[in-house]
Image (cartoon, rainbow over all chains, first blue to last red; front, side, top):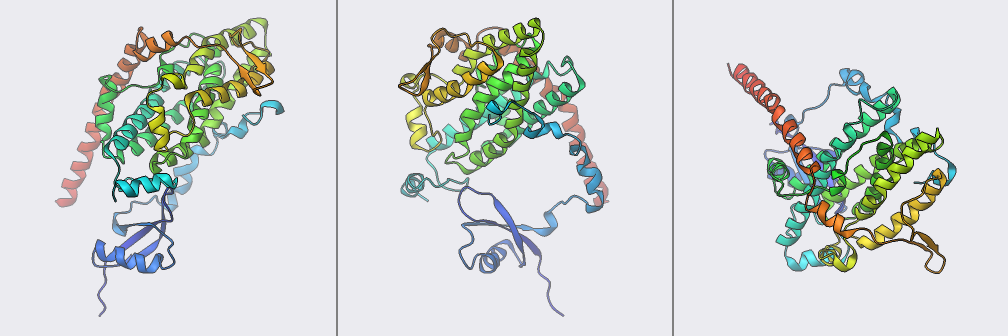
Length: 94
Length: 308
């Protein structure tokens, strides 16, 4: 029987100044080991300057079945976008 | 990391991230600047929020509600960026509530007429954008990233304001006169939003060396005047400055000297409005206390149940 290590989500910061972005996941017994595994798996070609690993079980996710109702309140508010405001061409680039 | 590495990163126009070593002064300057920026966003909800119920149409109410929601959101992005430097949000809010940290004095002007909402969007948000676009390239990563998000959202604020001014200036003579009064009220305060003249700005040099600031106050002020005067002309409104004239040689507008004594009085927080703003803010915080308590009680009850 194979041993199952905890699952970790991996976030990579590609370079200074930009956010860590989700890259994928690894299995590892602890955080330190997960970091090393993530380094070997996701940054073999210098894809990152910083790594975060987070236990997958700690991620709280929205429910795909509820997506429509969850995000619907933003759907009919076109006035939140700059394109909702027609201005004369002379000032349209403000 | 060390001072040398920090200096090398700044020299190379790289970004500093929260886990990096940084000089204490750099950290405290940023905590103060980002917190004051955050305070300005949430205090800025008040002068316009007062107009939500009185906005002249359902569309205008919806737009204004969305804008005030955005200001709250911008405050939260910025408090998050400030917290990444190690100062908890509760402490930052305490500093606002006890007036030990400031917010932009532009929010200590009154909004007696509907056209003020238009003028704020056009001029105050216009000046804010002029200030904030270079901050997207601030050397501190989380601040720059918050500013990218904010600038993207801010564009609608300026456009809706200008559109209000446009409707009023094309309306009845009384509406146009109201728009002109609002321009007169907000012109100088907006120009002073860029801070004291370079000759009197003690922090500019250091902030520029650290890559926190990219342009001086006077450079940004000039950009703002150059961009805004043609917009006023298109509205058929006149900024309250007799010295305002295009200078062909410089390729810029010349303009008069703001009343720096008034600026100093506003920064010191004179007048009745500062107490009103802080009072409303504190009341909002205190009135929300039962909600925080209820949320905490709910969580501990859930924990008890799942333990049982």
